[in-house]
Length: 193
Picture 1: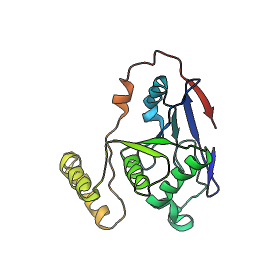
Picture 2: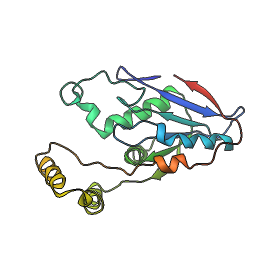
Picture 3: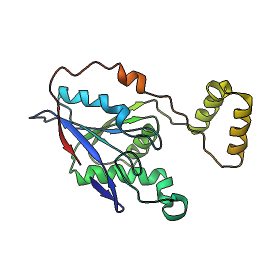
Picture 4: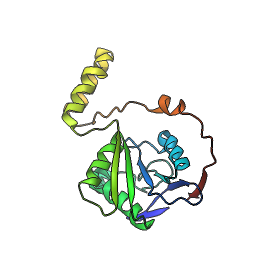
């Protein structure tokens, strides 16, 4: 694990022996998902690119030790914290050059990270990218929420207007991940902490 503000952030590194290419760091969606659905990225290790996946604070194997973030850890409700978390991972793992892959919510974090111009960032890969929150919300109402029963739509509108919920409904990548081809060369898990 790496430590960020006294929280343990779990990560996994996949690589082949003798790898010399810069790693790809994967940022999962959510908020509150885990890295599991982007595990097929480890296939890149067969091409010589180490892959580092991690669970963001409070997700999967990572901890946050907070019962009510709004009261005791409001930083966990900010994008800036998650950029800090990624920077800490890069620093503590002593990564000189790297690529960042962001999926859904992870694409927001990847873009925010990139605009800080971090040393060693070679490029971004964005999957299910979100760059305009208002357009995203409008398309969710048009394409997804409008398909729900009317009483559910009314409840969601009421909650949204009361600021009791934030509508975030990223498309599941699970079916795509399940259909990925199997790895034909051996890639070993070199670090699981």
